[in-house]
Image (cartoon, rainbow, N blue to C red; front, side, top):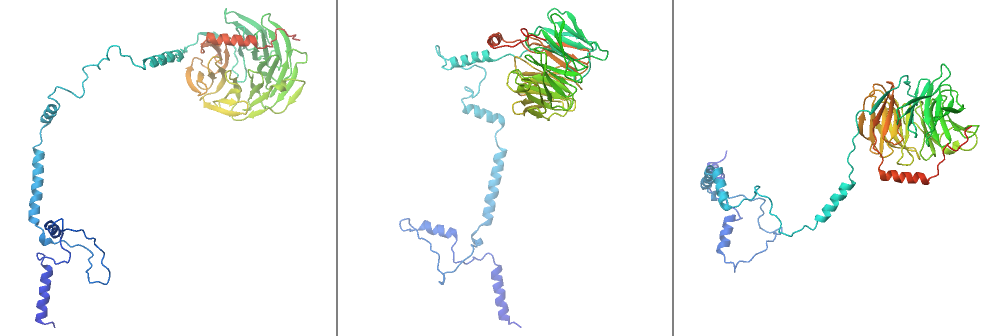
Length: 495
């Protein structure tokens, strides 16, 4: 049992530990004592001493933390000062000036309302007399140049200029029954008869009629130069050549076992596409007219067109194929070509709408049927697809603007409209509606301004879609055409 002395000693030690008012003894002097000592010591005699880390083994005590001396703190005085500051801040907030007083003070500091930072009651001061801006001439020249180069947007009428009835115009997607010749004559096949409509006088004349009871006209095509000759294809596979001035049959050419759905001229060579899936080249100058037969399609050839330079033939068929043929196959003796130079299989429906670009060499536009609905732009040199646009409806025919980079398309199911596209961006700029059935055919007037559309609603509508050629450009084209060598049918012996 512990003694009473040891118990009392332990009690005193415990009381000393619990007494927080007693000054804590530490070998490290408080900061306020060191500051007071430095203030008493003169600066001249004060020398900075570099503290060195005590080496191990010496009797210098080591401390791991600083314990403040709470006995030296006056907590009551600190609390009083803190509350006094808070109360003075609150009183300042309560005694802040009003908005009116603030605005008045701000106005007085800026000159008592005599001057303002922003004032809109007066215009900017005028320049001194005789002053001229150095950039005035530059801006004026740019404005005049911009006014000369900028072209105002042309107006495209939304309604047709004229509407003609076309009874018995067959509703057949694969036929080509309307064409406009260079002599300003429009050829239209209505059932078994071909009619000529004079665009200048408005007169109508019957050119020919099929003899067979089950025969009917399936395609018409004017010769490119002169326009005095018209090729007519029939359901019985015959291709006939007519002189529209005398309304006489010049010759009849065979070569197909089914109807002739498409025709295209290349100077003296007439190419015909048929339901028998073949393409035949006819040389109309010689008695043995059949000079080549091309076999590349598997079904009816419904689209056929020669390039403007006459070096390439494009054909489209009901087998969803687009074929490109070289012109050399139409030259020389009789020959049969089993495969085209390029065979493109990107379309998902029949390819009837074909048109070569008159502004860029080897650029071809093609359109697909109901299951495809796209217009595709091709580089015919290598078969690369330059652009593809989903039109939303069946593409029946395509026609380029000869004066501007624009493409006109006619459509079937389900809108039955005409669409004008800007090339090469293929942005739709105009939509023409009026037909109540699919627009199967497009034909361009000789001056390149009016388009005739033939539809299954048995009407022909004439649209003023394109603008007339600039007189300067027209003169350049006339000079270029006069200097170029032309081969036509006027001086040929047609047998």
